[in-house]
Length: 127
Ligand code: HEC
Image 1 (cartoon, protein in one colour):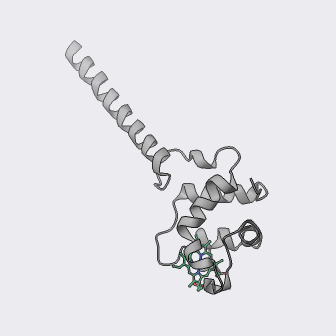
Image 2 (cartoon, rainbow, N blue to C red):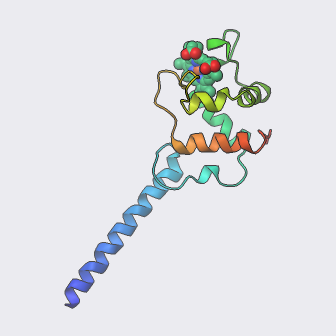
Image 3 (tube, protein in one colour):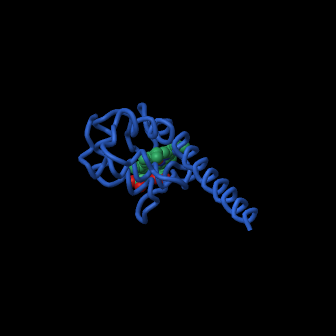
């Protein structure tokens, strides 16, 4: 009987330890759809959180003299304008009436989209 109890405890430990592993993975990479979304908690920094994502997923096509679709990004004023007219959230969230972005790439993770939405909903601060 004691043996079964011990086995049950060990299995429980293994299961909870492996769920911790996924949480840590999400904290490190932020791009998966599992685990808690810590990036969208609290104040979202434009410089530290939003820009690195836009840099990775958008700026390659939407900066310079001839930005794709005439949609300019790459500095605070331009990114804020795209957020204000609804196109930033509409395109990354693949909403009807908007072109799905980033073009030709997988949709951003739920956490990344939620983090950008939080920045928009809290006033698009230049922080
Ligand atoms: C590989 C190039 C590429 C990347 C990366 C890319 N785009 Fe685009 N984007 C385009 C092209 C080409 C168009 C014009 C054709 C179209 O609308 O599909 C466009 C159009 C747009 C438009 C105007 C279309 C509309 O629905 O109003 C917006 C806004 C936009 N992109 C936002 C983004 C955002 C935000 C990202 C990053 C998450 C992004 N794009 C990443 C190529 C790209």
